[in-house]
Figure 1 (tube, helix red, strand yellow):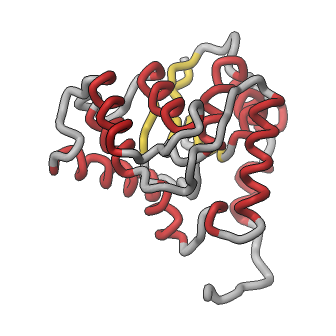
Figure 2 (tube, rainbow, N blue to C red; figure 1 turned 90 degrees about the horizontal axis):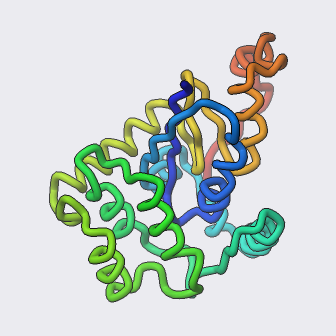
Length: 214
């Protein structure tokens, strides 16, 4: 059985789309998924990047694209009242749901739909309090223990090579993005491309241009 780790932040519409599409993409394959919340903003900061919603033009395109993708795959995605928002409250709630800091699929679904199903403010304190009551976490989301666990999970993801969400890790390989699900399925199915050297050769390809970060 393949052991998959799904790195996510509920702020990401692409993570929601990948989460929604995952069961069909993995149909017929023996696998088990662990869902790992991480702070996408900290990953971006580590790599010196801005998120798609922080770049003019790309922001608008991203919102149009994800709504179209949702319609194409039958996922009822509605933009929240404002975006981006501060996701820490939701990530800490997700981490607090069990001692391992990894919510199950049903809990992740509730958290994703809180953001992407109703068109309301995702970080609204009243809505978050209602969500917390409904999910009944085993620990206090605002405890130092939970905050530390989320921070350590994010740092561990960065160390493992994660640079964005959604990312699915399996057998030391990282598959990034909602559109990587067919590639992931091909790997898990023993696809011929993965029997060659292309995966490893891609890591050794030299760069002929280096630009300084602003």
